[in-house]
Image (tube, rainbow, N blue to C red; front, side):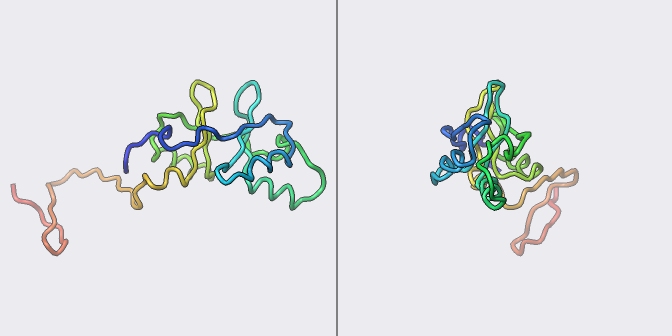
Length: 148
C-alpha cells in the first residue's frame, strides 16, 4: 500500500450547509457530479453529513421538506489531512460509510471518499510478521528455505 496522506486525494471544495437547510436545498447542492455529500456545520463544527441516499429516503417517505438536522447522519466519523489513505479506508469500513470529512484543528478542510482512496490500496493487504528463516521462491513459485 502506498503511504499517501488524505490531503493529497480529498476534495477541498465540498459544500457545507447549516442544520436548518431544507432537504430541497441540500438536494440541489448534490446535483453536481463532483459533489458526493453535503457536510452539515454549525458554529461548533461538523454536526452531520447528508448523502444522496439520505435525500432519496426523505423523498420516499413523502410529506414535508424537512431541515437536514432531522435526517442527517450523525455523529460523523472524521480524519485529519495527514491520515494515510489506508487508515481512512479502514475507518470507512469500520464505520460503514463511504465518505469522511477531513478536519484539521477543528476546522473542516474537505471530503474524502472510498473512490478517492481506492487507487492507493492493495487488493490484498498483507500484514506479515515473519519470525523464521529467510524465504525465497524457486522458478515454480514454490517456497524454499534459503541456505545461510
